[in-house]
Image (cartoon, rainbow, N blue to C red; front, side, top):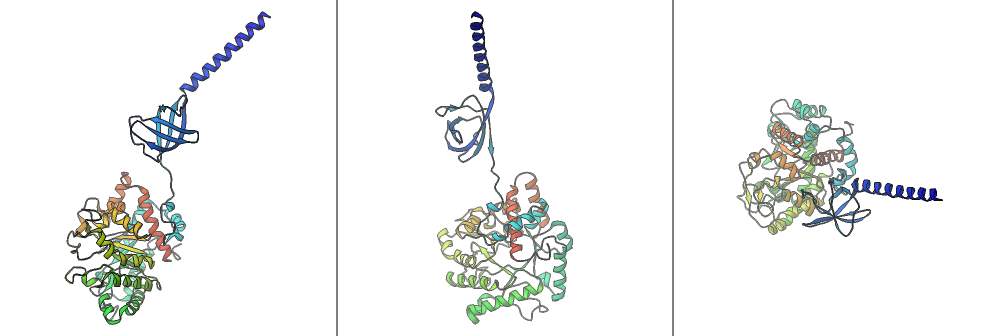
Amino acid sequence: MGDKKIYSIVVGVGIVLIALFFLVINKNKLQDIAGNVVEVNDRYFIVDSEDGKYKFAYLDERDITEKSNIEIKYKGKLNEKKINKMKSYTIVKETVSIIDQLESNGIFSAYYDLAKEKLDKLTVDEKIGQVLLARVPEGDATEAVKKYKFGGYVLFERDFKDKTKEEINTEIKTYQDVSDIPMIMATDEEGGKVVRASSNTKLRSTPFLSSQDLYKKGSFDLIREDTLDKSKFLKDLGINVNLAPVVDVVTDTTAYMYNRSFGQNTELTSKYAETVIKASKTDDVSYVLKHFPGYSNNSDTHSGSSVDGRTLEEIKETDLPPFKAGIDAMAEAVLVSHNIVDSIEKDTPASLSKNVHEMLRQELNFSGIVITDDLDMLATKNSQDVYLNALKAGNDMLIVTDYDAAFDEVKAAINDNILDPDVLDKAALRVIAWKYYKVLFPNKG
């Protein structure tokens, strides 16, 4: 009987010791909890986990913000009423698909999946190439395409001068043939003062008329006919994007942009934008609304900076409606000016302004391609990190003359973790989706 009693005592003590052992082990063992931060204050933050809501004291760092997804390591048992201590933590960056970061009902959204498949096969260098809309170099333009894999070329008057249609066709075909992804071939064929291709009498007997002259001669009917004629003319040359129409509302007849503008009030300019974009949809040449958010009576940004001091209300009332009308008519691209618009973002050219791009995307609901004016114009040429900042601002394509500098700056920013790769991926994906939308891919696979 005594032996049994001793045995029971030994077993009981053993169980207690084992329990104490595991209690000590568990108290010192690192455990995990994960959840979302739902409140942050000076003393602690609250994590909402599957097991409940817990307060945690900070470590030395204070990079924890509301809505952060966090993983915490701690010792012991958590108490929902007290402030708990943690040993370490990790802020979890949620992985969101590039497609999910774009507009679900965007103009090119039906092609996002195809574009993503293509994007996933590209190197970083090739992605950078896709966002560059380079001026055709005076040297070996074909070799430049092979090296940089440009998203496209912009042709100026010198690229058409004294050449026949067949010569231009051959040159453009050579560029396209060496490009793995079909290229955007763009030019400025506004009519009137800016006629890159039709200024060559070998291509057309007379240059295209300005929008002002067309309106005087035949109102919007003639503008529609002119757009159809212009589209066919450009398509026959191998051009698939026209950097027009100019939908800036310009009232000062002495202003730099007046002769290139429609020269009418906001309402008529809006109808002009709508007419051109709708007419352009009947052919394979895309038209680009410019120069967002409205050039107005500002000076020439080719030769230096230009500051727009008007109020935001005036810009919204006067300048934005033509762009909205064109976007509602399914404009595929918008070109942003280099004007500094004080009421939107001081000391920053519109082309480099995040606020300007947010206005275009959010207030005007534009989901297409945002293109800079030429970043090598004097208004932006000497800006620090101009190409990098153009991408960070929200542009999808950068018009560049110095494409070597543009490529090197963006590549260095990626390598040095200064530019989020997602920014480049989103821009390149939009560009590729645009090319699918334009049916440029059938012969390229």
